[in-house]
Length: 97
Image 1 (cartoon, rainbow, N blue to C red):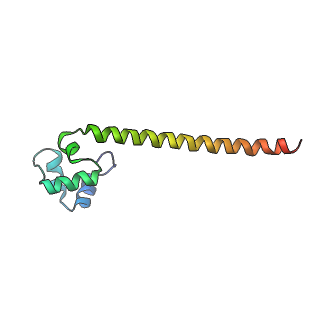
Image 2 (image 1 turned 60 degrees about the vertical axis):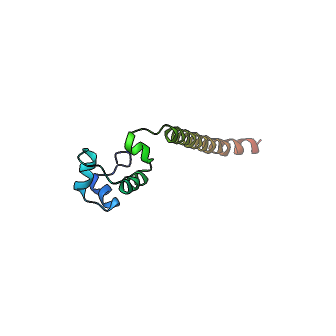
Image 3 (image 1 turned 180 degrees about the vertical axis):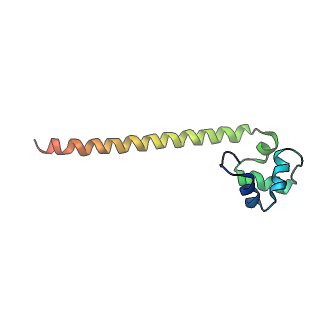
């Protein structure tokens, strides 16, 4: 929930359960049923294994690769925009000669 900047109430509303139920899951007073756990994992964008064990090496590695790829793509876009700006400055100078 923290990763999505979501309150327990917002998460409860998203799942259609009470805030009390979410709090009991968070504080390990109760364990959700398997179908509910699956819905929670889906809502959070994590695997059921991650939800239950706190780790999911294969999916974590894939997500890290995706995150790094997105960062690289964003940086390439920034550089491309900077090059275009520089070309706009240089073109008039070259054409005036």
